[in-house]
Image (cartoon, rainbow, N blue to C red; front, side, top):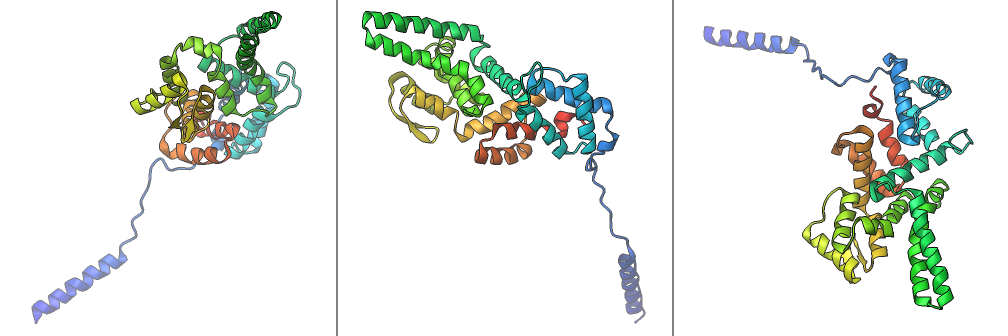
Amino acid sequence: MKSIKLTFRFLFISFLFVSCTKEEIVIRNNNNPPKYSEVSTLMVENYINRLFIDILGREATDVERTEYVLQLRKGKLSQNSRDSLVKILQLDTVFRIGDSSYRKAYTSRIYNICKSRFLEGAADMDIAQQSSNLGFGIYLSQLDGDSVTMYTYINLKKYYDRILKSNYWLSRNKITYNQLCEYMLNNGIYDLINMGSFNFVNATYDNIYGRKPNADEFNRAYQIIEKNNPRFIFNRVISNKNEYCEGITSNNGFYEAEIRWWYFQFIRKEINSTFLYPILTNFLKDHNFENMQRKILITDDYAQF
């Protein structure tokens, strides 16, 4: 009996002790909200200057820095306020001395980056010279009555002229970023840099996807470029070089690769999947290149806040 009483007393005390124990508080490190009010003016100015360089290709003036520091401070450095600033630098068409407009400077920046990426930085003067040479060839062919050569030259000239006009077209939203990349792949300069179908296929995969094609991808692409044999690639049937250049710059793999490429250009590190997929989901829906860039440029990683 005594043993039973002792056992009961022990259980009662144990229950009382457990019921009175405070709930455990779990503290998670590195999960604090950012304190943007503590960000120095110098850091904000550095962010603005970095945006100007990456978006427009130049530093901000003293007047611009002052104006946009106030604008960001008014918005408490929130991502919405940063988004508004980046949108101004990308889309604003108000005339500005030296730039014509932010929009013109922005699209010129994209155009020059793409020429560097795809055409080894070919100068517009050199592209125009190739177009002019073909124009003279067209004139001579007309005099000779050689219509076959004339139309061949007319077709070749078109691809050089598209490059030269693409900067203006992009600034006026007459072409998309996808089409700009397509034009950079489909011209005589790119052909000269990557001579032959073997090199062309490998170069397009490297330039667009940042990798070499696997054996199956290469064989399909090679048949298209070298022999105009229709093959199923990029989720469609493609039968010639024009369709190939359009297809490689307008499929889901292209959109993901572009996010990865631009993230690395802006932040100098690989993007992680947690950040990639929300951006990719939107990019696949709207194909809005400027919006995709803004998602990167408003992050704390880029701002370094």
